Length: 182
Image (tube, rainbow, N blue to C red):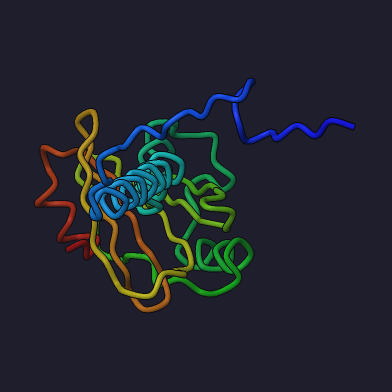
């Protein structure tokens, strides 16, 4: 029986090893660091692209609802009717804005971020202003402003409620004071 060594090349000749220069010690560290940073950057970028900021959703929903207008569930309700309707929609009494010269045009029920929201459209000095209210679930009170298509949306917290007021950007200083917007 003839035994064959698999480590040696075919035949009986011996092949000399080719000396190679030593690998730099830090090369492995740099490659590992570059790979880790690349994966981290790709993950963070994917998260920001896949999950948009949630505060934008509330402002976008209010702006869209303001542009749509009617139909309304209640047409020209009184203040007491608005309060009772709100308890049915969001489950609690909401401190709606009350000032002389504010006329309630109508109300609608919305769902924003899988939560019930109430929208009331007011008429004040010839301008139509929409006020959206939903139960606040975020921890810190925040104020946001967004201009879009001639409209200004302002969002803020008052107690357990998030209020969003949308109206014409040209008269913003006047209606923001009347509705208590910052």
